[in-house]
Image (cartoon, rainbow, N blue to C red; front, side, top):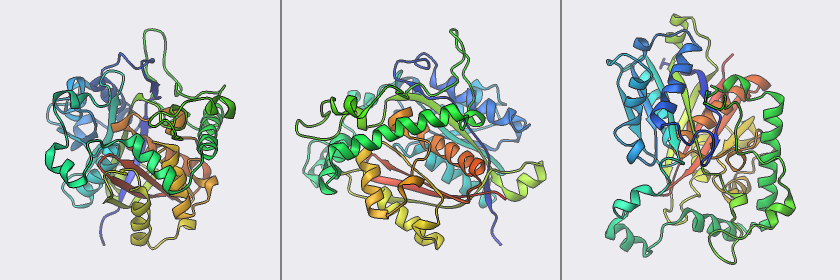
Length: 382
């Protein structure tokens, strides 16, 4: 019988808005913060960790030179603990989880901390393009375009699925309302590692706009094309944050006297059209469910990254998922999308929600630049 990988614990920082409370915190230090928290919460010593697998997207400047390794050193962990940094665009830390699971299930490692970080205030999105074209002439020649734009991809999706501006704004308003309700109810309390700052601790996600409304969202101008429907209000916020997941086998957890939050059941990654770019979650979800032998109705909660409202709306149309089960705590439109940290942040939200609500299956998926998507199936531990 093959080993079962489990997520023993999951912790995240509150998400800071662009140029907000976390803007001056170095991403290596944000990484160290959640690495320290995940071990302290579970009574483990750093020398029990075999590897740190860390997601980060814009690996330049303050996020260059292997954030995962430097974060472990910044946390004061022994120099013997290695670390590596993964870039699968927005799915980087979700892919870090998949890599960690593979390592422990195969017996190569016993305890791995997976996760990710992004300081979009300190290292703005697209910074790497200042030093060269990432696509090169052959990719551009293949696709016949001089522009690979996620915003235009979101507009293509809205047009293809006939998604109205009203529909996208309604989904966005729902995100803020649910995130505010989750914050007020304490749904996030046990998953947060508060960040101490000179002006006081950051204890909640900063991006939630409690005063937004359908009227305010409707007043925003299209962001990517004059006659478009995608605005700053129905897209994810630029933000800063980090999250960490403690991964091992069921046997190792028992040996250490730890009770997992969830079992990792299946994980997939797919490639899709790199020009539309954002439709990958649809085939990724289908592939994952087929491998698991489950239907969409078997899933109790979904975390579908709200990179753009059109991505989530098209995914719902294609999968037939119950809207009430999709992003029940709000999403990146409300709280932000710190690129390399978002995958682990979604996992953290999902595993705690399954436990708190006594639900069984959770599915997480997110679109990724380059036309890719990861999808992950977890099951609440019982």
